[in-house]
Image (cartoon, rainbow, N blue to C red; front, side, top):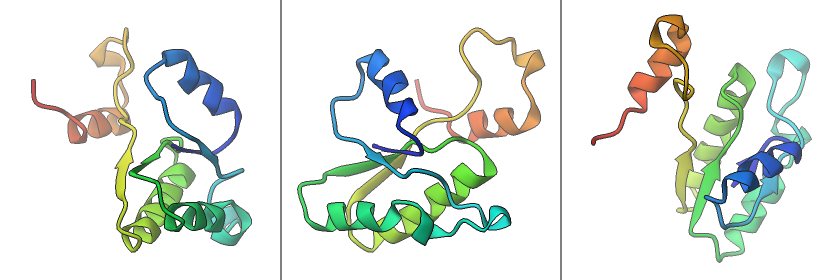
Amino acid sequence: MVVEEPNVIQVIEKTGEYKGLYHVLQGVISPLDGVDPSQIKAAELLKRVKEGGVEEVILATNPTMEGEATALYLAGQLKQVGVRISRIACGVPVGVDLEFTDEATMIKALQGRQAV
């Protein structure tokens, strides 16, 4: 699982749902702030995956413009390696009334819907 910063690992570990390894990027791609892929740990991720033993890479970056840009970049790079790539779901938080959900969140929730 790929995360932006180490503090996210604790949140994921509390769930007990994930039993794999982590890769911490130490940031996100942000052209407006002058941060390109060479300034985060993207190359190290690609090296780890190319070395083998990785079945799937879960992209768990924040649902911000920078987090989405980083996930898209990494997905493009990882597709060339041939590993399965997935993205954590985004959408309506548990316990929130839909009438108070902003448009961007509702779009993500509709795009990520699942069959029941």
